[in-house]
Image 1 (cartoon, rainbow, N blue to C red):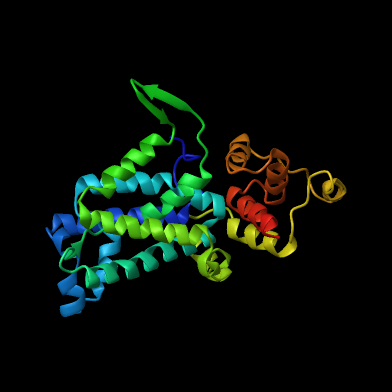
Image 2: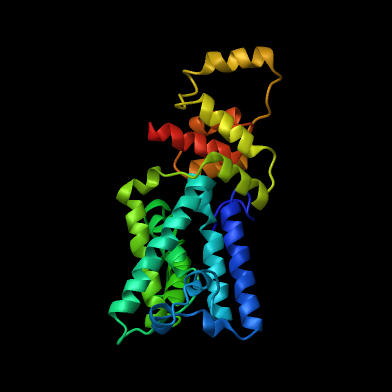
Length: 293
């Protein structure tokens, strides 16, 4: 399946999560400590090893889980490109903290049935399946013998493999993540309106993925454009700009295709890319801000 342009372009948060997950898994796996990362009832409620709450988020307990998990995290970078890195960071934070609370409650109330949970970013992965189900359209269908499949089937199969990889110990974190994804989808507590401070977001973006002043362009666009008008109604402004500054190059077809795959029409996508000098991340944020008004 195609998750947009290859690599981590315009996806610095995803890049950080993927690298951190791979490093933590390899580090603890090589040292033979992967089993110590499990979120267990005794560690949390009896021994009060609170650090387990953090360490259990990033490291998988086995190589197959790591492979499937990283593939899914890499594919879901499309959502960071769709809503922008700032709001995606909010989504990640919400999809980690809320399921973590549910998991602690599950260990406390189901201790006779469930004494530990498998480590890894299960909550984030399965929270991402909610927008994947609702927002990613089916572009093709095919059949293998009697099975009717689509271009999304491979992602669902990878998710099922990961969900049941450790039985109930992986099922519970996955379901908690999916529940958090539903909360975010339906804007519980107004979470979709939350954003991190621009200074923090731009600093993180520069540290994670150096780009050609995208954060500067993004903040400039947010400050000067309250609503993105149609291309025809803004034609005079464009003509005035052409008289004072050199003509900007046409936006790349790849950027246009990416924005159109997110549901924006070609005219609005072209206008946004012109205003942001073909910066895909800034153009996406500009279009989403226009939709919110």
